[in-house]
Image (cartoon, rainbow, N blue to C red; front, side, top):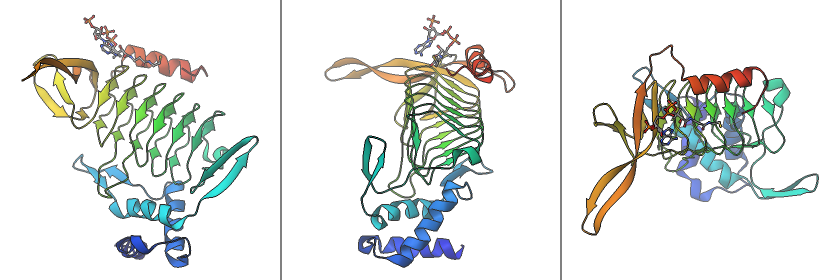
Length: 274
Ligand SMILES: CC(C)(COP(=O)(O)OP(=O)(O)OC[C@H]1O[C@@H](n2cnc3c(N)ncnc32)[C@H](O)[C@@H]1OP(=O)(O)O)[C@@H](O)C(=O)NCCC(=O)NCCS
């Protein structure tokens, strides 16, 4: 355990006593946020067993930050804001394209080649190289978005801050998340998978294979699958109801890219934002 981690864990044990006047704790926490902002630290990553490993102490630092910062009023042209946290800056150096109306909080990491259409990325989130955060998409706190991912318009990637050991949403490399999907509460989309427009994926939602009818998981769409929102029949004392599920309608091999997704990438490569 590094000294910095030990100190953050110590401050977190005393989180109830933290105020903006606590200079020492604030110095440590701000250092963690700077490292998150530059991509030197991550809240979570996939380990060698393909499990999501959460660096709990990094999340503790984010939780402490809210105690250690006071409210401040800032202004951008006619717009006024009143908040505790700073916005991310220095996009040209980072090689990130940010369309007016987009904002990311300091302490999120945007890799080179990321495009932010008017969208939002919260603190602790990590977005991999070449990924597109399309119009009105939101990337919640601590969510982990891989390389060359497309989050289509209006996608809601849920944020998870508390408890500190809670697993964040993970979208793996090359995934395509269709318009207005909601991926929340530590749900995970595997490499190269496609989630059809308007699908909700959470750890409560069964993922069912259309070929076999089997439930393959809850809240985890495996690698290289194409899945859409569907319904499953449920009997309750009050009658028959249809609850949502995620239905895998296709499995692709590793090299394959879904034709509709490939079209989107092609348009982007030629500078047409989709
Ligand atoms: C999931 C998706 C990739 C599937 O495309 P596809 O492989 O060509 O599959 P099809 O369109 O043939 O659909 C297969 C079946 O799933 C159904 N389906 C397709 N998309 C669906 C969705 N989003 N929700 C529910 N059902 C869907 C179709 O009705 C079809 O049913 P059928 O077999 O009874 O006709 C595509 O429908 C999709 O949602 N793309 C994302 C679009 C998007 O968000 N773009 C963002 C930029 S505009």
